Amino acid sequence: MNSYLEIRRFRDDQMIWVSRNHLLLNQLHDEIIQHVISVAVKQTEQKYGTLPCPFTFFMMGSAGRFEQSIWSDQDHGIIYQQQGAEINEYFLELGKEISHGLKLAGYEYCDGDVMASNPLWCKSISEWRLQLVNWSNDSNWEYIRHLLIFIDGRSLYGEASFLEDLKIVVYGTIHKENLFKRVLNNTLYLKKGIGILGQILTETHGPHTGSLNIKEKALFPYVNAVRLLAIKGNILDTSTISRLEKLSEMELPSIKRKLYKQQFIKLLNFRLSLSKPDNYENSHYLPISTLSKKQKEEVKEILKNGTALYKYVRNLIEKEDT
Image (tube, rainbow, N blue to C red; front, side):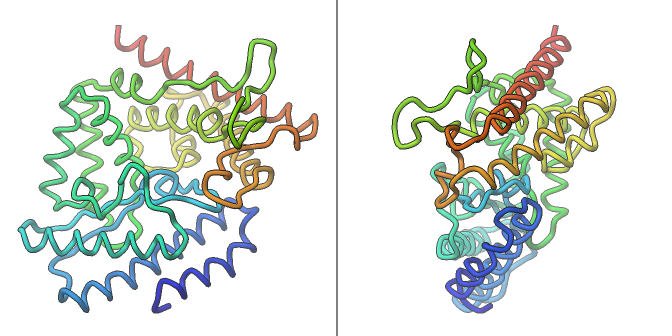
């Protein structure tokens, strides 16, 4: 494929075949994004000359965790080998080109500007290392958030070792400085999905009235809790399922790992089969009135287990911090 519009047509043609299969859907997303990067590299080389040094392009957010729905926004960065003003400018232009290509291919720009077109997320290895250390050492809430976004990074193009080596530095710093309480405070804020009377708590106003916010109330408790356990266990995998599979008995007993894995897979499948994913925002909401009694009970079970996992991790970190 030689153009972004050609890639968009490929996406539209293929999406219908994978829209109900989480694994195949995310494999397709990877393929589309890799095509976009290849075209962007060619375009950039035509404008600015050959790549000045090796680099890696990595995805973060749901793409980094291999947990995208049909629609997804952009969360990505670039790490390049050598430093220098002209090299910095070159890769920033490449980042802009990739962001533009992804937009044309069907991926919305990130509202928070977590993209390789932003100098904050497009740096040389040495600059990245310094920035990550600064984020770790600063008590600023936003910096810890950036750090956790980076930890979900997964290389999709180029030298994957650039990203992996930096993650090892981040993990080492978190362990050495015992930053787990700060990480906990940053991510494990729980929005309740079930009310006092056992009812599913849906949106009460706006276009999604009567729908459950899957992202905030169902996915986040699992994603954030398991990420923290993975950091404790020095697990570099990014998907929640892979992280759960690799946790030790010390981090989480096997019987619980199996339960939470089953619940999380069921949640991902519900998001694909029961939501109305006609655009990025709608894919985050589940209209409860369309569910059968059995499906409602299954959703409640998923929410309850997410809350239980959240509380387990919170108690684990607070206990160790005393």
